[in-house]
Image 1 (cartoon, rainbow, N blue to C red):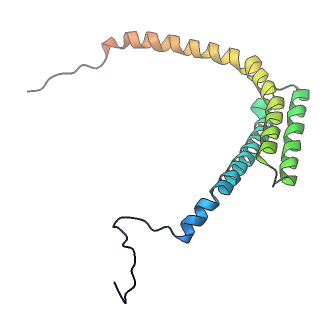
Image 2: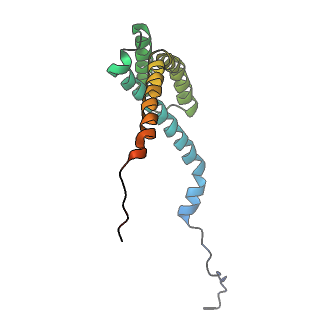
Length: 149
């Protein structure tokens, strides 16, 4: 004891809680909520911009009917404008807007892939497999390997 004052002994390898750690625990729930909000906002923003770029792509836009293309463009623009005006919205609002946008875009894109790209690509893949398998059978007359002593 120093000067007659009794202090508790702190065992080795123990951490002493600091103010910083206490504040971290205190604000952990707030941080989690903020993280969810940012992730939901980013997901909506990414989806909207990806859909806009997809629709502007010449290969894809040529396969879409004009009315479907217009419907997707309008929905995407509305979502982007909503995002610009509602940066501080709640997680549920971002998720609802995302579901609304997906509800409009996904069926149109799915129809496009089923109707336009699905059939020819699958047929092309089968045609490519045929020659490669016959080429593999004729590969028996490959290079000769001689052993050297």
